[in-house]
Image (cartoon, rainbow, N blue to C red; front, side):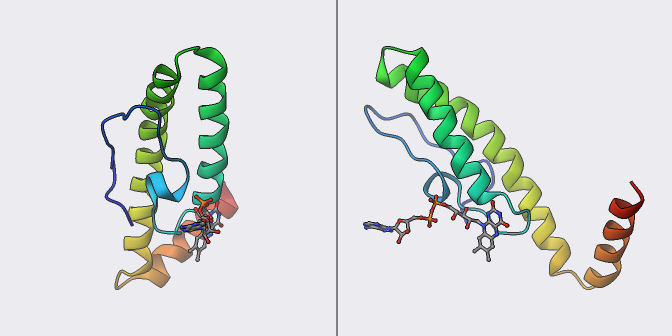
Length: 100
Ligand SMILES: Cc1cc2nc3c(=O)[nH]c(=O)nc-3n(C[C@H](O)[C@H](O)[C@H](O)COP(=O)(O)OP(=O)(O)OC[C@H]3O[C@@H](n4cnc5c(N)ncnc54)[C@H](O)[C@@H]3O)c2cc1C
């Protein structure tokens, strides 16, 4: 896993998408979805900017925000799964989802 809110300074002509950019624990079912979102966001930024480095920066600002939020979600889910009262907490969560 990479640290939650992991980011880097934008580099000329290169960026990362998917797990390479934001490897997180698999406790939210998010990684593959984020990888596809990254590809779409980077593609959109490249369409909207004639300057490639500006497109990369625009994509990275957005990606750091949504990937950071999801990394925090997966981290707290992982902590629940490995906690002493995992069964009780997960049962409550499932019941709450079923009711909601
Ligand atoms: C147990 C588990 C459950 C998960 N469940 C979900 C889920 O329910 N929903 C969800 O959205 N995500 C889930 N994920 C996360 C998801 O699998 C990843 O986030 C996603 O596959 C990342 O895609 P990627 O293309 O960035 O990387 P990868 O899928 O890892 O693809 C990278 C590819 O690059 C290749 N490669 C590596 N090095 C080189 C090299 N030097 N040269 C050439 N090729 C190379 C690798 O062989 C690999 O094929 C889960 C992950 C795990 C571990």
